[in-house]
Length: 480
Ligand SMILES: Cc1cc2nc3c(=O)[nH]c(=O)nc-3n(C[C@H](O)[C@H](O)[C@H](O)COP(=O)(O)OP(=O)(O)OC[C@H]3O[C@@H](n4cnc5c(N)ncnc54)[C@H](O)[C@@H]3O)c2cc1C
Image (cartoon, rainbow, N blue to C red; front, side, top):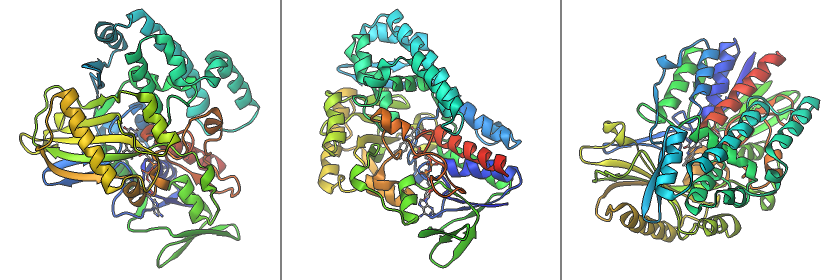
């Protein structure tokens, strides 16, 4: 059986590997000359940057994929558990989220004045809820049958009805500690959503990182894309690069996949291209006014002539008014004037990611999914703001130290990866309905059309994109 997969992101490659390993003839069609999609790499002038994702969570799921293909992940890539996971800069101090939750609770008590027991009880609750959610919502394709409804009722009972109707930020007021509330609110951004809108049960996202751990793969995140590509090749997947799909039609039970010079016919089709971009390729109408997209980003890839002593691999410098930041993004469609700043420095682990006495700073802020928002003027304003904030909070003067610069904007993200309006994760999860109505893995009309990747179920981020690919592969295998 022949299957075409459109796009070589994490979701596309995981689906391709599982299918090929079961004897399917799989070809991946990719517009770029490289694989990995958002998880690509810049390597210039002695500096190496991961282009998108920086933090690995759920490494067990990657293990599961390699095992399902009869391979050992250790033969493909290596990773280590991080400690600390993230350093947070708040007011005039910083605090570490550690690998061990007890240590994190101690750090919160010592530095931020929240009683250890209060935090441990808080997180215990979300661990319980997370465990049920993982079984019901993440590990399988969503099917609205009797068993799903029964499980959903059990879940609502355990999670608490109130947590469906209040927001993450509202719930987190139970902590009665503004600094820890801010840290816990931030996990809503892992779905590209606002903590002031997304339902309180999404607090369980914290469990993924704070309990299960944050990881760093040797040589950075791109080593995951490389590992998946090698896995695909080892099990017989074919790749065609520089192959941009322009149009898809469905006639006489076959998909016609159009590119510049060719038409391919296929009975089965898996799209790893952004869900909304795929709808456009299918010549379907999108009601743009009704779309509620997740955040996009501006990323500065800065090669700096600096050796920082008080920064870790992952660092967050919070905005002063977190609520206003999300209001500017989601209600006003603007780049926040005081954005929260994320800094990732992989040369702390891999010295060959920067020349001697230099570091590779990946500096990211959240923006709306809006192709016009990153004007030259806004980029300059944001850059000046970041430089001044880093000086103020971290004590490092970057004004004469940036010796290499590349910039990712919503527009370049759309150009490079096909992300609709540059949104990182497709639809946002700012309401219960948007979570329930997250795009499914199977097309609502065309039976043999499937969707994988971070814009569909179960969600955004590398592990969930990987899971979507594995779930769809299982479905196709079961049906044949
Ligand atoms: C700045 C940034 C930071 C992030 N941080 C994290 C993080 O820390 N941790 C985490 O887990 N996740 C993070 N993510 C999200 C993560 O990168 C994605 O969820 C995941 O990589 C998505 O994979 P995907 O399978 O959806 O494919 P994508 O990476 O979206 O790839 C889609 C592929 O389809 C190809 N394509 C598109 N259109 C066409 C066409 N017409 N014809 C042929 N091919 C086409 C593209 O070229 C691309 O290769 C981040 C993303 C970004 C951008």
